[in-house]
Length: 254
Image (cartoon, rainbow, N blue to C red):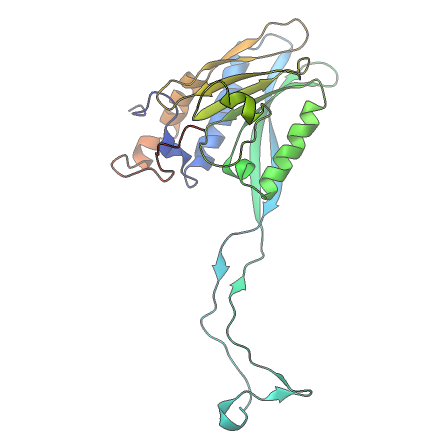
């Protein structure tokens, strides 16, 4: 059964579901490109690995105190008058979780296996202000933009900070959108090609540039999304009779 939405399914933006969506999108984008890339190119997969602290607090419910108490039931004092028992504090976990984010690289099959185009599908961490995931993503974005490598960014998340290379102020002059694809060509950094996408519309067919005079290849994002939805069996996971985790509001259009 296909998704009931004509394009991106907003129910799949749920942070509990998104990691599976992201993994399948990257996999199917790479496979789709390898079906259409000419000889001399291959779509390969790369990974970004970092540590992200948990956002949960751990509250201990038992405190054990050894030794007698002083008069009146108050705790005894250390030399210098420092008490040995405090009020129960919340204990914040500091152990970090390992996060792995995948992306697609089109490489030329030359001696250096040079990267020609990088394709990113944004994750919630990439759009979360102050997070390690966002800092690392923006750092890589700056590094790519300082080279002649093409950068294709696919943002299928309505929430979070504006992150793609195309400036938000310029995008808004072309009207509202829910989702966004931005293409910055390595030889045309002064201009970005953008596809602003309404929730009521199908996902676009976008251009994927190659090296030199080799013509662009076309990536049909809606066809890929249909494959991803079926491969992930998301019709079994999503409860469409309930409101989506990321609410549908009048302010959805950025």
